[in-house]
Length: 463
Image 1 (tube, rainbow, N blue to C red):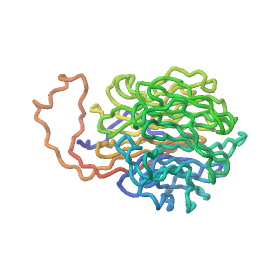
Image 2: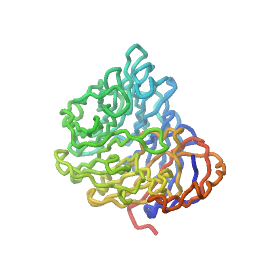
Image 3: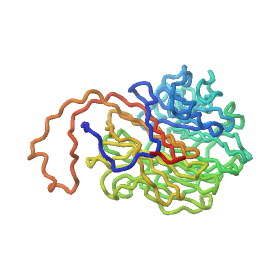
């Protein structure tokens, strides 16, 4: 593996008010972050990551961050796949899975042990957490047991919604024969949860791979309707509830994609799972995802003006030259409920012609998803390593012009000099249509991963 010394210039401006902090304690197995803003008090922000399930919080708008204790369970060996949200009362709610041992790789229901989906609450905005977690769906160890995976938590914090205050959870359940999407709701702030029920009309394969039903996400509209989305083989499908999550219509394909899982150079695994958001002022829906329809991997956005009945042609979110051979991947989206902007964070390799070094880009649309301005949230590249699990997700949240993104960053130990190749082996620029990097390169050793949080402020001009 290689390490580039110096700053890779992306050619993008930083977002206004840009600031990046590390919120994990040290390099380790930290990834798959989530972030939330308290709509009642936007100076309260909480970010969660694994493993174990951990929360870092700020009570001054992101100026200072502290680790909270008591978020992870003590009675399971592993906790992760975190999702965090604030309810309408300003309580922070954390969701995670917990287990002792995974099953067979990608076939999680084979030889797995006890596992489940759990929720824990913080009544002071993320600083302290209630001692007892609530089991939404706990599976004791037994033959042919299922495995619960990739939950995502959504809060209905629309004050005029008939279901204001409800919390919703969706996730994939893998059994030995299939994968399904399960759903549960809470109408008392996360204290109790309804028995899980299936909302996927089509069931997928039992492997954590293309062909499974995975990547649940949802948004609650101002009228209380819940719009859910996930990947189903080569389509994204949507199911809608109009009664606060008591019942859902059938899950219907809304558009196709090449594949939800794909290969990204030097990344252990990657996916293009979708996110859904809504501008509550116009009730316009937005979906973002990533795929390789253009050869290399790009991030896309599609818009629905009629509550999901029709969708626009995909708009390319990353604005590097098309077919330039570099990947943009692991996107996440947030629609600002106050100004309607669409904000997307993703890993971006446009600065490295060898398609390895990654920067973090923030893309923002203020015209309803027609075009996106791209900003460099980081300036120095990092280099993912196949021995380091980068996770399946990044995270982002936006409120009233302030944007907070979280991502996994690959740390390295002391770089070791690598002897340059002879000119005859390196070749010349004319030998390839693809430009070669001008950075000095070194061998490197992986140290672990950390979680970083970026902040941006679009509320006023910044010098």
